[in-house]
Length: 580
Image (tube, rainbow, N blue to C red):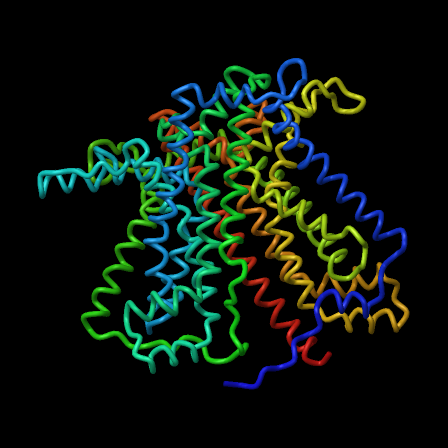
């Protein structure tokens, strides 16, 4: 094994060398960011929690929770959400773990293509995929029609909670795949060689060595899957399943009103379980060492498969990709289908659905671009500022900003939207008679707050790769600190900033939970709400599918061009860092 190199200077040490920022500017940035997070994250969520624990007189009570668990429909919804989230995490693991292990551990032609195709489900909203999967795997879908014709039986994959679990597993398994592939690639190959020399082979090697070393990546992905499924609103609604927590919260707030305490009780339970899942994932890792002694050394050695093993492996991968890409195939066919009912494939094709979308839904496309560009732009500005304050200053409370911003990851979009309705109800836009809750600005802010953790992590990673000596050199030549940030630091962070922008943009573009609650008029509707509304009727599913295809194209193109830009930025930055 290679010698252990001296560790690089820690971020805090770099900040010390760069000099502490104690002027007015850093404190002003800190105050503005803190105020933003308090008003648009802490107070709305705090309002939801407070409302769930007080009675009409303002006194502390647990009566609302007693009332919740006393009603059969709410108890059933609670356990259904828990079962679907756990089952989806399990089946997502069944899809992701073998796919990650096979493509990392063995020599595969097209391994990169396989991993890329495996991530594609993330760029389609799960509620859109649910409609497509009903046409393919439903009772009268393509697969069951063929099974009934050939073998005389059908598989009820899309019925009730089973259908929700099926859709969620397919959509969210890439979270586990991405994290697990990254973790497996970081395993020191010497550890595997040692295990092989001691007689570990096959399943035992995977169970006792490989998978335990990759456990941090697996748990990170599994926790995200659980949280996303537990909080999902669109998929159950589209599939007509309302006996789950998120649909019940939405129905209580929209039908009974924002004063209904049970809607807030459900919201608190959703927050609690989201936080619990993320905490447990971190807790399991606490006290265990998964580090390797060398960085940049040999990774897991890729091994050749025997012909029979290759046949089985390619067969399994082909089956997984066929199932996970079924929503994309189905939505594309539906967007061109003139008639598709009780048949394996559409009976006739047309372009009318796209004509309808370009005629009637141009405003939705424009709204999506407006909300998501503003939200993602706000995220990278705040994320860059927080990263700089944490890594380049010694402000005493700077870590609070990271904790507060990251907390948004555990807050469901539905809960945040309910908090906005409660907090800002009755308030008017300054110098106007327009209610704040009737403006599109709250929609954009909900998108920004929910996606801030993604942008923040990208900006933090980007700034950690910018050596502080580059900033010191600029200041030694007479550049002010603000000029250094603008002309040196931010350009060198461009790749990470863009990655954060695109991640925020593409995830906000398919946000439905907050959108359903906050959109007050049809003129404010973005593409996600347009797709949902179209899908509510059989006649509108064609245009809804066409709009879904456009949404996937927007997200896919944004992801592709961001990767191209990031790679180009890295190629340009590499010589600069080497010369430094």
